[in-house]
Image (cartoon, rainbow, N blue to C red):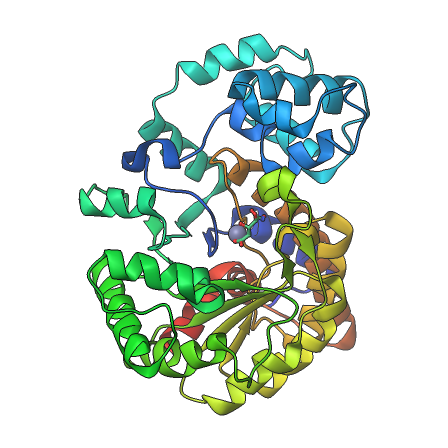
Length: 417
Ligand code: HDL
Ligand code: ZN
């Protein structure tokens, strides 16, 4: 194909390719519609997303306490968020803008503030069709779920062998195993594995058998855990022993990456539930040491603190078995995404995944990806223009290839390594 010969055609080729690219969403909290209540969708779920609940309590919702809020039915909770966060204040946060974008793209009357009419429309949807519709609008080929074998309500769904659409892939979430051995050991024991409360070698052998069984059962794309700022490796902690004797051997035997999501300060304000987690600066050396120690294992890594992002990029340049991804949670904010995406392109080329949606509510796929496309189009248009000015002449196919790379292509290449 012919090369792009002027800056204007390059600019429109880049913007068009970002608008058209099919995205692989490599981390969400979505579930199969067959898993019933586990899959959240609709306007009331969006309004009560934990980001919104946290915002509600940054405002002054009169004498409402968080304890009283949790006792209300979902719709009443959503009403309170609508009233205080949207109507009584400027809904300027990224999460609020996200609700507005989503409803607007769905053709609903958000400008008219017609929450009752929107709810009526949502109530008339069929969840299977709605999933296909949302995936179509966001233009995703698939989304990776978060499947936790330590949660009884999730295990119950797998026990029933319910159908899962091909557009949803699995990821095995193993936080408890890594950071709360006694709780994990109890669950494994109840499932028939000989795991004792003490994390000794025999118990770790059984834990490996548990993980291998789950890997065979749900065939995950990767195993994943979120870790606190205090996570270190090497160390004489149970976490390090579980990594050495359970997770790394499974990762190597089954060629499965381990996703390290680092820097979460769990339950900084427990009353807020999921919205009560905070951020701390993680130890990039812990991830780098794992990559260096286990050259034949693969690691995917995202970090929550903005402070960690530069050091993480440097680490990814040292280790081919480290794949950097996503502007996670408190980094999923336009100004930070802009900065992180520029930095990653400048340091890693296209060998990273620019974002995961982290959607907990199906509808959120619409805004998370619409907003992301907008930011990435601007950043990439500038980066390609800089390259053009330096003398390089890309073809439209190369532009399309490079854009797909950061929206899922590089991730798939990493999995295939
Ligand atoms: O641990 C995780 O996967 C996080 O994404 C948390 O679930 C968090 O509550 C979240 O939804 N962040 O966006
Ligand atoms: Zn998540």
